[in-house]
Length: 88
Image (cartoon, rainbow, N blue to C red; front, side, top):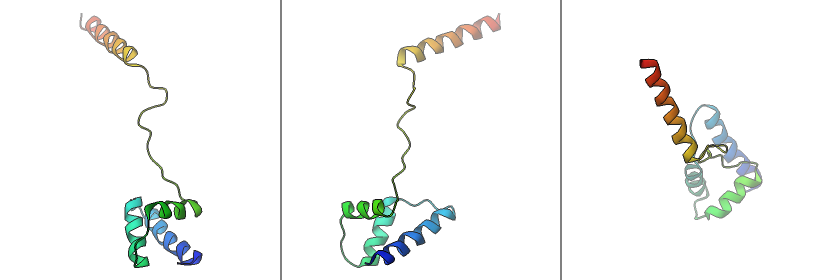
């Protein structure tokens, strides 16, 4: 596949994302292999995406400033004490 053909392939899938579709790397990889008509390594496909400015966006596993477990438990205790005072 030439560079221009690769750009057209990625642009076609970019239009799908702009239309609101959710595109996964696996779906892109399978479509690319199907269009090539032969096997292709996943590492080479990731290099192709990187070369064309695509990147993998993933959510963080947790907030970077997440409080430690002890602080969370103490906070829960304060909330329950405040609720008991309001009930009286």
